[in-house]
Length: 164
Image 1 (cartoon, rainbow, N blue to C red):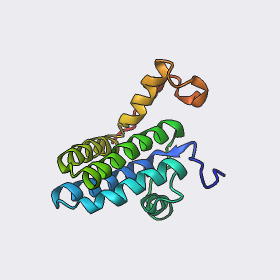
Image 2 (image 1 turned 135 degrees about the vertical axis):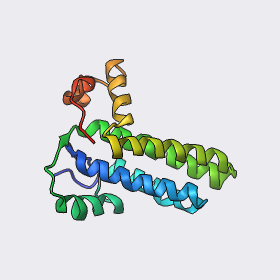
Image 3 (image 1 turned 120 degrees about the horizontal axis):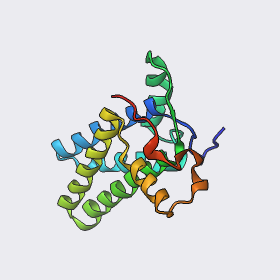
Image 4 (image 1 turned 120 degrees about the vertical axis):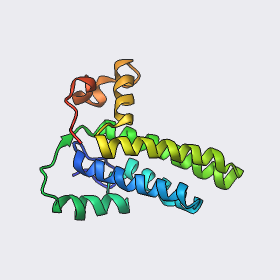
């Protein structure tokens, strides 16, 4: 059991990709409809997921409790720490977008960050390519993140990629 402020390890990659698809939709709506108020649930979702996994994330709950269990696919366990790192990157960018837009009136800067999140989430959802996970692997390789943080991640580049 992960507890309220824990993060699952392993993570079901099927659920992670579906959450990413939800992020793609939210980012696309934010940009296409010019609705900066959607930055708030975007940032909240990332913050909730980085702190508690799917526990306090409405999108995470929908995916893990309703959508994924109804799919005719087997779970695909992957290491949790890189996924948490990726959620942290999303939290940092989406929270910065909120501050830029609502605090400084810098809508253009906020839109650039949302577009970056959109690209990363699309890579995850469509191609099972987790950009944050790859950065996590590079940081481990560089010694910035100790091997003990994720024993399964010592050579994240050697793991087979999932097919889309």
